[in-house]
Length: 385
Image 1 (cartoon, rainbow, N blue to C red):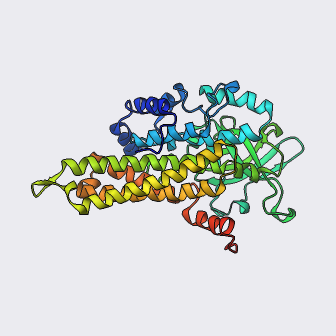
Image 2: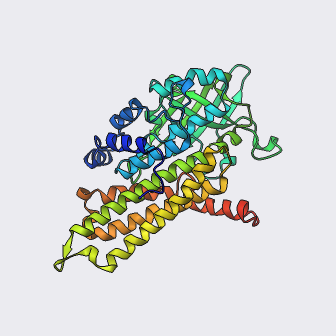
Image 3: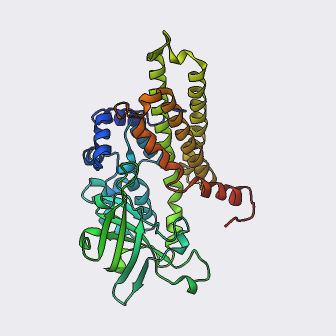
């Protein structure tokens, strides 16, 4: 169930690694709200988590397609890469826009696992998807930037050493364009935790290790600024195509997992002295979910190939995120319906993946915002907001 055999050796290696972390492992993490530290450590030690970091900084220097394959296979094996996937796309901001000093200092340590870069602070309670209205400020006092404000849905902050933060360095009323006046900082949270930086967990319907973060007069050196001051929004935008592609790959992995679970179950489960998979009422939803998955996968690989060629696949990355998240959710709905009452029993693990799959039509970037992007930037319709 794949459109190609690209990076087949990586696929096989990831699948083999995931055998050490079966459904019982993930169910235990989910039930107890545990961060899958052993899994992340294994992924780091195997070199998969640093696959996109250039060789000169200790990584494998592989293209985005390799990262997509790694995340897809984790999800296809029943796992959840959300515990660590942010490192793959947040690292790109440092790589593309950081100074050589920053890259030489941070990337080798991130690659080796000495430093964890899993936290990405953008969203705020009052601004939500309206990123340009964020209020967290970073005011330069002549020596340091003093940061005050709050972020929410900053996942994995409790399990990360570094935080990539977007903050306002110039008041909104003083800029010519709303996209100006925002800056990106790379902050070592260990220096400030419990003092000028407070992390509070946010419990959700699935085990996602998400948090809200409060900043109170947190002082950081200008050395922590990534790129130019007031130009941070475009740095964040430049990483969004990669983010959407990688998340789409996870969705395809989830869809394949649901399809395999439903197909195997419908062959084995007998009601009225025949396999339920012999009934078209069971067959057709499975076949439809498979068709949606394959179509979405083709769009995903279109986006991946354009990205790896150095092009700007804004349309394709957004379409991939839209179609792959919808394909994953349709497969989840189909799977739980195929299992019937057993789909709700924790023993079968369908309900855990069902809850996890629902997230990706909301975040990162909601389905409605993608539709707005397509309407405005692809179809050239008037801006709706």
